[in-house]
Length: 411
Image: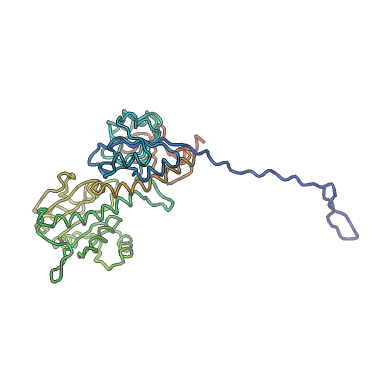
């Protein structure tokens, strides 16, 4: 008890000896209980998909942390990971698809197909890429009916706000585009017999890159490393400046002006299309006439073909039949270029997904992880019967539900 005691004109506090303190108990946050995850890795049967979403090295880490991993027979063969590799890592090899799809979490390197809908179980979690042009309304409705939590791994953000899997696949695509072009410039592959980097006394090939994003940057790096002359076009001055700084080499750069671009394409030996999509589709930058004026035997690699292509003459090809000629110009228009170097691409995907799966277990399940991590939340396009991606909802005319509001209402 405290009172004021008056002495003369001054007042000072007086503390009674009966005063006592009662400390409160400290309250600590109780972390969520760690949850064991049953993970299924099916074999991909989709269009040209040779990647696998988890490598044996990542499976070994997951198994060591107490998780059950089930791998369908032959799931990793496209990336030269064999059943014995997964078995030695602690995974169970199964021969029936139905057994793989009993898992709590399905991890795929290709989009969910119509055939796989029958195997999916209610309330499962699916990590996979999505390809909206190939999706069907019935597929989305079936996934909603089964209350699947579907996460597009290309849309997952890391702590710095970047898209780690998209960046990795873009780096692969940029480097592969130049190596592919070098291959088709040779006589062995119907080219006119040009060495990309030239030699002493013989000038190098000229490479025109349209787009200064990650694909364009790594295409430029690879072309410069091989000794080619590189010219980059983009309508973003910021991206052109960033590419100059990142490459650390003075390049010919320009905004996209039709006449200037047409003049450069007319002298180019290689043209790489790597433009940024607008509204989900790549704008057509190079016209039929521009291609017609290119040198006979030159090579076009349209990396933008999975978004429609930025060359008017582009048509989708496959890894089995990758090229066609038009106006004596070789066109390479294979979607999913990363699948052509599937082992490297698989490791890149696995390096991102494995820590996410460990974090899912540590947080007590995927629902808790989605609540805690905005970057993971960004990849969720279906959540327990609701479409949480505005682009998918708009594309199919389905009701859109904001995931943040949905989670708030459930908490």
